[in-house]
Length: 550
Image (tube, rainbow, N blue to C red; front, side, top):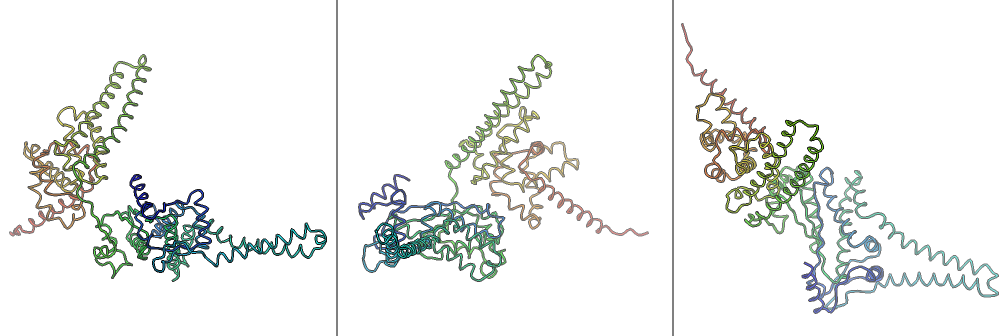
């Protein structure tokens, strides 16, 4: 990125013979001078500049989710970052004496025009100040005049008036240095009476216009184009009214067709559409959330399916962080255990020593199993990685759950005998990707086991259990609609259970004791629905029986 920026600046210098400049060092003093005595002009040369600098700002809506004015947090974050990037003094000067750039007339290449009014005012003030100082000096130094007081009084008065004028001119600058735009907007939003007034949004809009004009000014001074890129995340975790406020704030900032703002809205469209349709203030405007987003978002970009190499890289990064953590903890625990064993060797009995060393062996064995399970996850020759979702959060959930499950099972010596680490990893993926279907299968098997099933029932495949009971699950789709939305691709589910991981009823019952990433309340709700269904059938049978008469 640095080489590309340097190349763009070099190409710009060849074309315009002007190098970009930053408000640093002597250029900082030059900027303040320009702010007072010059007004910028947008010329053809500036419009054709290819050198663009991007200022990136990240805004997490979740940090302001508890505020009634989430949109105000977006604007204040923007103001605060721009103030910090360019410095508070230039922005304060611009608030007081800055001018919005105007377009050049014709093909003029002059980018700066002298502000005659500012020059006249500064010249007049300097003349009056020098005149006052000269009169006082004359009254003090010239013999024959210094004995009189009239000239001293006149000179002192003139100098005092000019000094007062200078202080009065600098007072607004000092005020804006102390009270930033962020504090000003926050104070306006805290005033409930003012927020209900018609001029509230007009005042906020005026502050945004000042900020936009300042960015135009800095573009011409720095001899480059500026773009403020704001990345908005976690908006789909907020209340519907907050979501609407942020989108309206974006539209306000983008209302100027030439505004140097670029917003990257990182959201789940389904969640945002639901928020827009539920918000009371959007009735009649966003009854169809998808149409409203189409009118608002100018460049929709949906992330395509992740590639195999990218998926493997993300998984490997997640494993590395977990493995580093495990190695540190386990190594430390083993070292501490060995030291304690040596220190207490004379005092401990042989039985206690055997128990302590056995626990260290369990920890070491758990690490080995965890590494084997992780290897299966990102092995290109294994099919397990195909069932892992593309989302980074879901990847981390699986990676974090596997060590916990394996450690629970190694404590009970389960993995030493019949279960492989690959099967544990597959079970964790199954519970993460299809919690509804898996819960239904487990509930069906539990109900069947309570009714004295055949001796070989535990050898049945979970997929066969699902195929026998899937019709009943489909009949309850209205009552379980939200839960069924948690499941992934049904075709992949069939391939997973029927071919790649043919778990049996016995394995399912054994894994259930150590499953930590499956919400058991889902299974309890399904059990209640099945119980009600059984009661309804029994009642119907009783109703169908003929009455016995003597």
